[in-house]
Length: 247
Image (cartoon, rainbow, N blue to C red):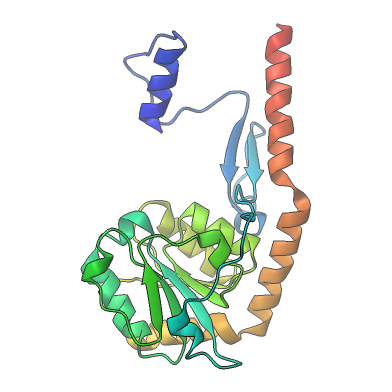
């Protein structure tokens, strides 16, 4: 983002200060993506020039995700399907990814796995199917739960589609997001490097069977889709531009 800001300033002929901060804060309007259900407005006062957006994701157009034959041929009515991903960067840690895969393979459920750049080095369980790239928003529309790293995009998309999650943070905002999910009662956060098989199994079962959790996710999803916070963000941007044009 920092490099993008510099390129934009250079492209439009603005001088680039030598002390340019890596994170630019606007005195007029700043947008941040985070579900209202997890926001920090219960512990801090959000500045007036900050506007919360529940999710920037949208439902992808086109055909729905078709379950791979490997899983389709095995699954019976009542079987559960989960999505597992540690994201683009997290999936480069093959040893860590394999550790989680091996533990999940011992559960009775079925999994769609995001393999990442080095997927050919991974060994999947019999009830697993994976690919280097998966259309995440389409998958969220067909799975019963998800095990994710808890980055903002994955987390907000899960809330948008009412998918219960187990968060396994790897770096940066994921730790805070996982903590917030647990604090607000929307799932569990586990250390992917240190959690035991029992801890992971219990978290997965909770995500799949906790009826109250599912009801909370459905309520959040309905609110997010009805709130149209992206539209509000666009309107706010237009208002800033209009005010600037009048000066």
